[in-house]
Length: 271
Length: 271
Image (cartoon, each protein chain N blue to C red):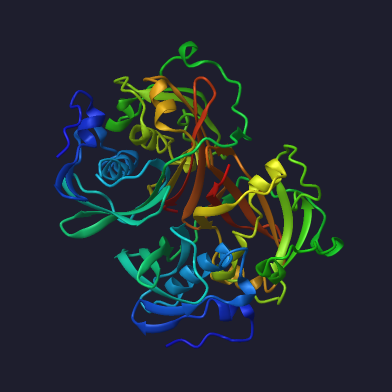
């Protein structure tokens, strides 16, 4: 059984009790609720946490895909995680989160022992105002948004919901309000912290739900650790809205300009 | 048992024999081999094929993630696919491909009954020379590349492998040489038809292997069907190369300018 730090709400929300190797129980956390059920990012984070605390884990995350099969209900859940294949330097994981014996989340992950190789970032970090020069955005009335200090440069939630169309580019600095040190698990939650692109595109409120989300990690544990609790620059945009689903792609950068992760998701929307 | 058309090499390569509901056997196809084992795109395609021919499938693909846990060996394989969760309009799938009882591929997919909604494409299709005005690129000595008619506008394989660095943007028209009508399964294979970005970035040959690949579909069966065997415009680029892995994102457009799919992958590379 693990005993994660109980200091931060985030650690409480992703705390898992080991029932047996690869089998965990957890509970949703009131501070991380969304409109209905928990914030998707905290669910993705707890899925990765199940991999991170598996005793057979090899290396650190390279890739994570989380499929939201149904709404997570408030309360208890179980996670089964297993290494489907372990190679010399990479390991493939399958994860399933259930509630009342029903599958709620399916997920896959890749962890790897990285080696020092040619490294190069092709995408440019936008030159933007630094976090400390910007005010904290007023969070809406959703518990999870109060867990983040978001400082929007462009494309925060619409001020006027008038149904006019616009682009969906968001650029914002974000960090945990409780200034917890960034790790792979909290970075995963931040990867889902962008408001649904359809709100920006249409300035109309419609029911939405992420269907599948992928995170590619471009950093290692030592580099992440060196960031402490600093801000992350997030840049997100949509490519396509088509008959009930849209996609969303984002990049997460450190204040020093390191590309930490790229992330993609497909989201259901009504009407 | 299904009896797919045997006219096209592609159909032969993705042909699956039903052993029982959700259990299939297949074989790799000589025409679709890569440097070692089959082309990743044909493997991703056969994984989706297992979902497509499952008798309980609801709707058409919205999302597919395929994890390449180990190299697929030439010869026989088995696929187990199951609906992990079926909702009113969406369905979540888990898929596993094995060889000699070892897990070689894990995958998840989402299918959905789409409804007509607000639809809008935010990303712009680049204005490029039309396919018929361009010569077919000379394919390298890899069997699968001979299955495609690729017409590069920018960023085909380097002509001179001199180790100089450049950007990784590829723009190319592509279609099946055998002019088979496009469907979700063949579109999946095309989503992996871009040469590894690291070759373009470094103009140096290094061993590579896709680790995880995701496709988001932005089209329905009727629209796809109307395309016949036309060319698809593919545009791909990398964002980051870091310690043994790089990412790659691409868009696939119809000749008429419809965004058919967006796709992302993370790829292992050596050195």
